[in-house]
Image (cartoon, rainbow, N blue to C red; front, side):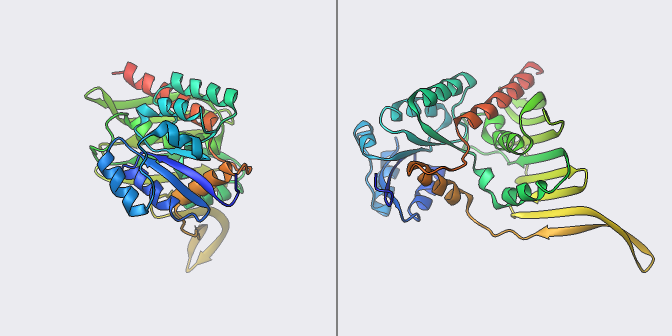
Length: 317
């Protein structure tokens, strides 16, 4: 493979797939070999707009690419990964890895047996606010608790998975990414028409810290928020505004007889598009470079926790 040119195939050009297409077109060393979608009308339209090939024979086109990106409905991930792995070893798949715990385990086994490089699209790891949060937390003595809130109002776009798989899994991954392995999970939720639409979970980690995660698809406000309580600081993180505030106890000072016991600092963050950074890492993976990306094992760990949360909520109804 020419390290200067990476040939990529893109499966799925719906709303999220179009975001991938737009960002891929901005990476100089990428050649978009083909795009593929069941919706031939939109696929042909985008192929013309971006001057790329609209695939009509997926099996044939897979033989000529260095990597494939899967941005299709979750229930299709398992079959596509198995199909693609016959031809390509570098696979990016949007979260979650698959739609069930058992099929996720099968993909992990498949990756191990066939030496696949699978990157899972846990995009929030690339959110500049999360990157800033991680840097600040490294300087804390001990993390006591991290609160994650992720809410949307009702949407008709996602119908194949519940809120745990649709939204909460992002923060499950972040909780494990920041706090490490889980020891215990407790969950409650609200079910509507057989689908979990609101979920609350507390993860007790092996290091003694806690992660309190709330996800909702029935809240009339879009929230993406993380707050971390450490023994020497409190960190407030807005993922939408890309803003990180740090409160620390300080030496007691007086101003006009008013006692000042803490100070607040704003962490300056250079705004960057997480998806672009994520895809640049995938291109590096395709070039056989060593990159730290969320892989199939991370996808499995997140799905194991998600499955426990789903089970507890469904059993409590």
